[in-house]
Image (cartoon, rainbow, N blue to C red; front, top):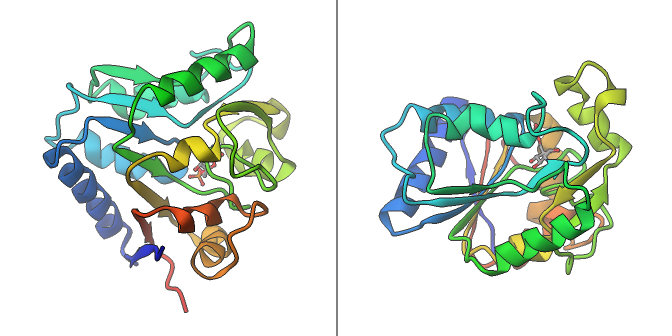
Length: 232
Ligand code: GLP
């Protein structure tokens, strides 16, 4: 399938467009949203917080969570979502993997079963510098379901900016798998900044390869990519 690429060099316009896409989803009856974290999502959630959109009848399912951080840790994705979105925009139900579960493998299975009981009307995605989606690092099977995964050094150093030092970045996470993500009816991927250029070029022009997880989106029938990167 072709990817619907929209280049918005003006970041405010890019995020306004993302809000418009989400508003259209709501208008068309979407109730189940796969959500993402990361610096890319912060301006989007700020705009959603300041919008009149109502999610109180909606369910959210987040992509991933670090293993071993308590929910209340400032860098847990649970806390990120409360602070950036849920405190201001309540949902009927919100779901984030429990990274402090006693048995994290059982938690991954529970989360995958939850996902299979729902239909994601939309999945919001960022992308890692190395092309990861969720925390599915290069080399992950395209058939993967929700699992406990090891983070690469590249991802841990990219995320170290949120922690006091790289040693504090967890080594593992629970993440929706690539096949879990691909079941969403619609995917909105946002990639902002030069560090994401190689991943977006691979998505648009490269081979579909497990070495660059984001390339799998080429096999999805309904994807929009919003980026501020002018592509050649
Ligand atoms: C993180 C998250 C991803 C996110 C990506 C990019 O590690 N697990 O869900 O999309 O990396 O993050 P950022 O938006 O901060 O560049």
